[in-house]
Image (tube, rainbow, N blue to C red; front, side, top):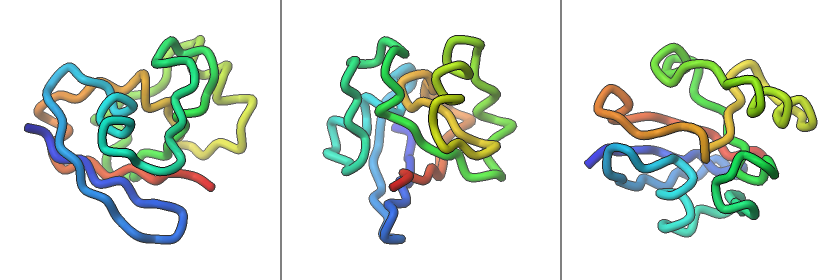
Length: 102
């Protein structure tokens, strides 16, 4: 299992575990992480699963693809913004930290 720490807007943390190949959005929704609405169900169409990857993890997670990048442009994004539906869990992401924006 891959460990992911979600940092909520109030500074609290929720640690969840997911299997390799699942998306951050899938594990967040299953765990009931507040702020991850995932209205499109992971189709990269709504940006309601926006998260900010902790800077020290950004290189391992990688950059957004073009369609994701265009959706992120409609938000108040950070340099490490990603859509959780587009980040697939893999072994090198064990211990990943992501922030859920307000």
